Length: 207
Image (cartoon, rainbow, N blue to C red; front, side, top):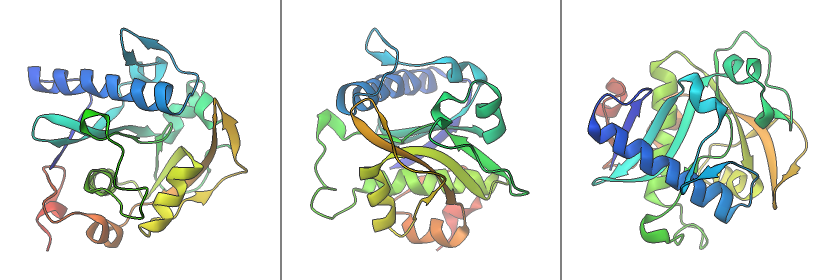
């Protein structure tokens, strides 16, 4: 499994991966979670996609199994910040990057097995490791995100606990919460699956 990172697609392959990512977001946020998002032609996108975020995609063979978009947290809040309605982003001297909502993770062919029985799927761990690696490579020490309570429990299970910024709030049919996640080399090395590879930083070659 490999992690790709890009903002504006530079190749036909990246454009194809981004299109599938938008489809994946529609299936996760609209179909599964029931969040109020804009879906057109089977794809979900919004005004934040016009801010040139960096997309991080976990790809197995040629199929994205997970994705997230990231930018400095100030960019999210300066442009509406509706996904931070649960709580305001932290104001500190730390470098923070924003992920405006839960990571979009879905098994190939729509299967969601693997995490319900206490086992965290490899695609999920690959996505976590890719996010941390990208943050470290770009000088960020924490991530601001909004996620649902189920995903918060997964984060705690793998040893990457969310530090809440406020109380949970209902979004669509799910209960969501805003919080921060630390980005550290120790966490990256602990979460990264052995077959996870990327070109984001020299961390991928670490033992």
